[in-house]
Length: 92
Image 1 (spheres, one colour):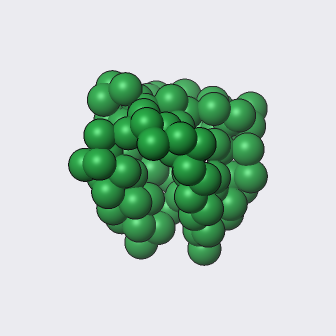
Image 2 (cartoon, rainbow, N blue to C red; image 1 turned 180 degrees about the vertical axis):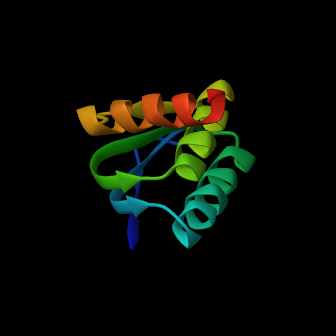
Image 3 (cartoon, rainbow, N blue to C red; image 1 turned 120 degrees about the vertical axis):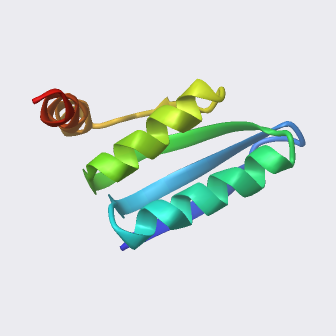
């Protein structure tokens, strides 16, 4: 399960606070939520502090969002490890 809490910081900035897992069907939910914010033209930040798991699809989504200017903050150390493992799996 993934809980997304939208925090509007100003007319130009929004943070999506995530709680739970970015995996399976929840990847699409995060994508839709992020796209809605980006379509509004706001500066988007994604707070990963309370993420308990993220799969390779979720990591790919985050990478794509970051390339588009989204800030991903407060990522737990294990998220960095999962990113590394997904890179290794695709390379091997």
